[in-house]
Structure formats: C-alpha cells, structure tokens
Amino acid sequence: QVQLVESGGGLVQPGGSLRLSCAVSGFTLDDYTIGWFRQAPGKEREGVATTDRSDGSTYYADTVKGRFTISRDNRKNTVFLQMDKLRPEDTAVYYCAADDTNYVGLLVIDECDFWGQGTQVTVSS
Image 1 (cartoon, helix red, strand yellow):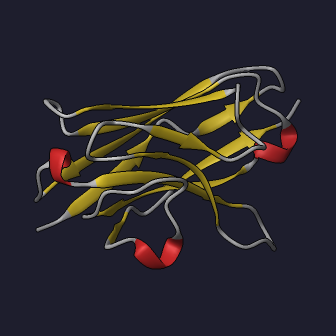
Image 2 (cartoon, helix red, strand yellow):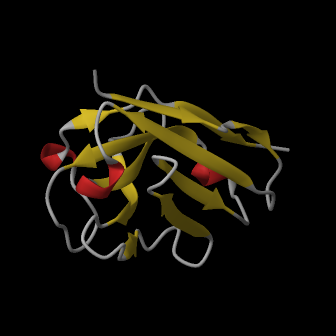
C-alpha cells in the first residue's frame, strides 16, 4: 500500500524555521520524483519545491527560493523541506506528492501519482 505521510508542521513566528518530513512507504523513493505543494485558504494548490528522481536536482518556486531547501534521504525513504525565514504568506497546508518520471522544473499537480494528507503550517506572531 502506497503511503506518503507528512509531519513537522505547526505554529511559528515570522522569521522562524520549520522542517517538514514526508515519509513514504509502499514504493522505493529512488524511483520517484517528489514535490512539495501548499494550499492556502481560498487559493489554489501551488508547487513549492521538487527533487528529481534521476539525479536529485532541485527546483523551487520564486516565492521560496533562498529560504526553503528540499532534500531526500533515499535510505530512509524520506523527503524533507527545510523552511527558513518564514513569512505570514507561507501559511498553508503543505503536501508532498510523488511522480514516477524524471522531471525538470517544478512538479505539476496533474503529473502526481500519489499524495500525502497534508500538514498545517501557520506563520503568525
């Protein structure tokens, strides 16, 4: 059974940091490109960061570039999203998703085969 389980969300003050984890099971992480997405209330889901399965290349949305870092530990079947210098506009539910193709650029929603249930990130003072 394929599962992606996000964790690490919470409430943080502006300028703070959080580290999200996406633990996968039911498939081998090496074989999948993984993306982090987020959805704020009243807004569409958007891609935040992607790590490609072929060589681990990483891609970021302009809004998070320089503040967020995506990484993967294939031995632990886990993908991370380190979020620094958080802003109130980063508040959203964050999701990880998997696609079984090589990818250049941010993963798009329609390409994803599997999704996690999401974890809430709230940036507020």
